[in-house]
Length: 80
Image 1 (cartoon, rainbow, N blue to C red):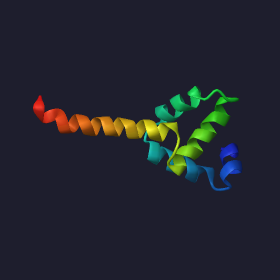
Image 2: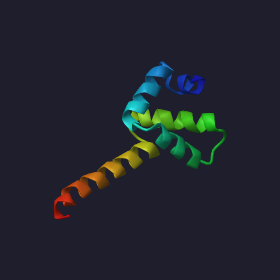
Image 3: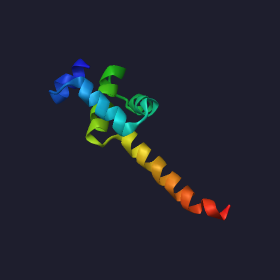
């Protein structure tokens, strides 16, 4: 939380709430944080949370791909 406050100079709880409501998945945030080969987990997770709060980052793109796939499957569901 201290790292998020240092990076954004705002309330870290607000950034966390924004990131979770946009990403809608803590496991997605953790998985994308683990893929990043930088220093420690707190550093990587803080970067991913800030990116998710901004609406960018790997967790957001993964969510968008999943929604796109679900939407295309929904349009083809009537053929089954």
